[in-house]
Length: 287
Image (cartoon, rainbow, N blue to C red; front, side, top):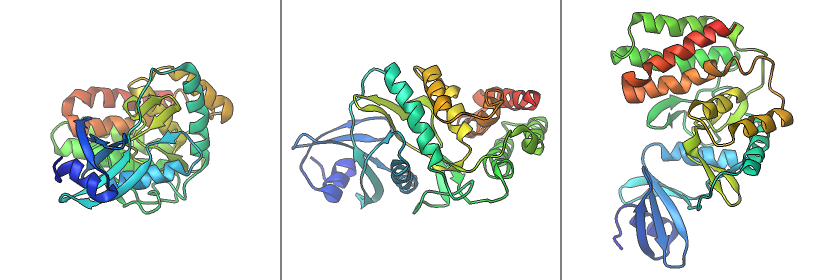
């Protein structure tokens, strides 16, 4: 096999003889002669991703992709994790995921916006930049300043939002202390917990591709709702039984979905603009 690209990176960082590769969509499966299969990913986001995976793994929560190596090779920065075969989603695994997410969130974070230990302040969610800068003045102020408004303004600058659209988002931010519900301590979040980042395996649900940071636990749960997840009702029920959510949490789902939807507006354009604005209006009407 070539000593370039993911095969070369794995050979350099971990040793072993590479016998095959296969594209996984943004990453590469690398098969070794000893039967081991790995996943190699390169790019500017992998340092933050590796720090996030290690932080999540230390939170007694769900299984996460195992970091085997990070480093520079083949003219790029690489993250290598263990490949895990997937299975069909099962109800029991979904309930275990709900309980494990509650444990992960309870592991906490130093502040809202805190990056994982060793993680950079300038991180990523998908391919969008995401700033992790600790704030100690409450979730509402941090969520407005570092999660909602930067993406709304980026959408305006790109011509996707007009002034009225931005005014709707700003109205949500102005009322965030009222809309946020009961005050909570910072939780340890996966941060990009949509269904594609939950792999169902023989050992249970396994999380990949985090945008980990200190945040509000309802945000992870709201993101699971955004694009659907098998057995989601069981996940939520098991979570709520293990760590009861504050009154009104269901009505706050659109508020917590506003951030990932704005990220989608920035990344993918007008196709998500209506959904983001609908979430903003729903958040305003929920109070």
